[in-house]
Length: 108
Image (cartoon, rainbow, N blue to C red):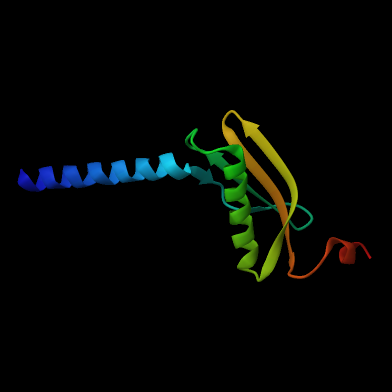
């Protein structure tokens, strides 16, 4: 009985801590980065809580794209941003390109 009570209190404090963090910074669910046509990738972030603003959700999705390209030692180049409000969602379409490559250099 005592062990169950301790376990219940511990779980309750973990839930409270998570809710506290969510209230301060907001929460987002992310899709896996998926490959599309023409070397383009897509990632979406959906706000779990209304404490997270669209700009914060956009920033979190950009961080996910940057981390994905960074693992390949490349930089993320945003191509399209789609925002929705019901549910609060941001979808980024991006390309990974070598660091230091400018758009103009690719056009030349």
